[in-house]
Length: 139
Image 1 (tube, rainbow, N blue to C red):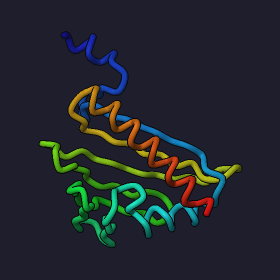
Image 2 (spheres, helix red, strand yellow):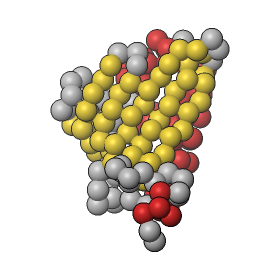
Image 3 (cartoon, helix red, strand yellow):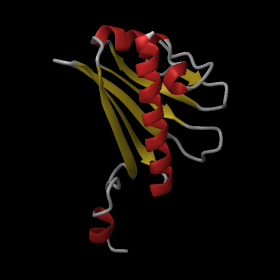
Image 4 (tube, rainbow, N blue to C red):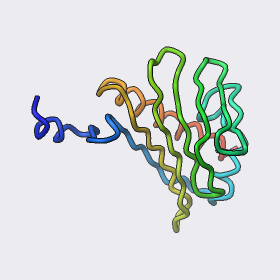
């Protein structure tokens, strides 16, 4: 496959490998969304996960998924590495939020995925996370 033909594949980048982005606007203020994402990270990182307060801090979920917090900007975004127990590589995940007229748009972006299959599995994972966020916020 030539570089020109591989560049046409949706989700494949030159520098970050395969990537995926999933977003949804939730009818809640950014403060509520931030409080859930930063204060209850199990809803998106996995059961048992605790988000570090400072960049460089490690996190780990009960299922063995682990990573390191890269950055955290209050009411804006969290960026971290992500490596499930059965993966041989790290990926990078960013969750960003922006207040809109109808609520808050939440966007998960993940890069450095191994291949198209991994990209599709992560698309489904992040879609399910957005569904869980909506349920948690409605309670």
